[in-house]
Image (cartoon, rainbow, N blue to C red; front, side, top):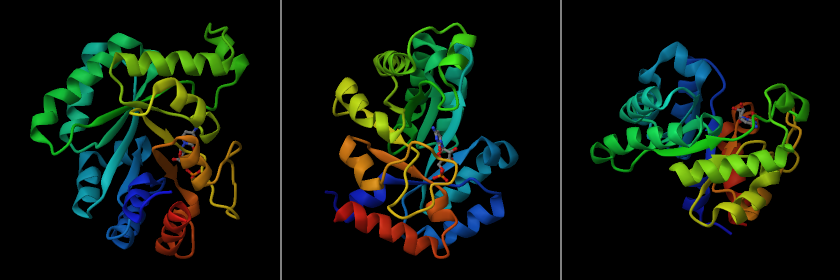
Length: 239
Ligand code: C5P
């Protein structure tokens, strides 16, 4: 069971929409919510300014850019993302330990200028990929083993945690220990539309399984009253 403040801190609202709509939503949610997720679509269109605009509304930002390049480039990219205000930043585990260590060096450089260092979360296997897709790129391990291998490697190399589905959260918590940041999308409050998500869990079940933060989009953003929808999830997490 979480306190009300812990529950607010645990929810990251995915802003999968245009800038005007996202800002209008943030204006409504700013006093209540704590975190939003800005993905590539919003970021590539509007750049660092959109991160600042979220901060101006009192919101912290999970910048979901899924970085993947040579270590030198990623060190610079992570430094830049940290400087423009990413509070959590995603990177691809498949970039390997040298790349992840580069990302960590990048965010460490900016840490003295920030209240808190930007935290890194690694993507293991994209959930859009199945066994056949993995084999196509030369990976023959079962998906679950590949996810576990990449997660362990990423955290060992300097990532603060990982992104995984709620169904994997318990195994990942056991594997990575109590300090890892485990971020899970695919969360649906009881009774909410599942939409295109296939492997869903309720917010309370995801937290119970060991998730640190839940990425929730449409159940909040497309609700008739997004603030009420957010509050209902907070209440569920505190119950
Ligand atoms: O609207 P919904 O709650 O499904 O949004 C979840 C967010 O998490 C979206 O931004 C989506 O891109 C992201 N995501 C996901 N499943 C993954 C990885 C990311 O739904 N496996």
